[in-house]
Length: 262
Image 1 (cartoon, rainbow, N blue to C red):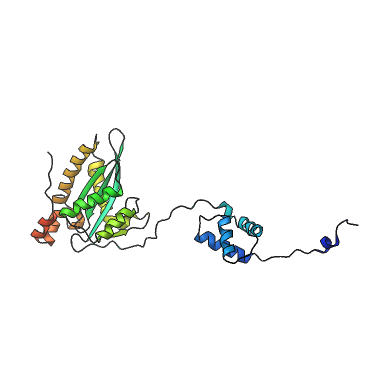
Image 2 (image 1 turned 135 degrees about the vertical axis):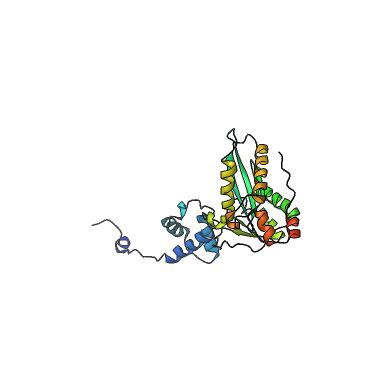
């Protein structure tokens, strides 16, 4: 009456359990994000799984693994570390970048480096582009007359997380302390320095060139280190704070001879 074969009439579908395939594909997708279907299928076959490729692909598409979006790079998990005040110079430094425009609208960047002990500004480095290699060069310059600290606190900028800088720090036995992303308060000493520098230099002057900026910035840095009172240092300048807490011969070995153009 139905004009079909008896075998088709009496056939009952077999409900196969796909949980093993789901688990296997999910584990591979988590561990090997760039693998596609055929890479996973052949891996599973070589691992002794005899699932037919049609069945595996059906589960693969049901899991929407064929529609995986590009995964963003993630930073290494950063642990919160207390912002302690060092007991001696050259124990902890801080580094950070700032950005501003020249009078013609062209952008430039500034690398600031300070000693956390007395908030002393060690370097103000302006340039249109500052790479990790330039950061290393400036640290090498400081190493000549100042020595190097035990640790340097930085944010997660590309210049600071670069492998080149990491290798340099390991070779020079300097630890890099990274703040948590989006938590600038964890680098509070350099952030306070940046605020003063912006209010008293960047926001007060319109510079026509990098060279004119350097002159003004170095004059300000001399004033900041030697004469400007600092509230967190009992209203002493970084220089006078150092004189009060360290021997003079040790101080003379730390400070360079500043040359200021009038």
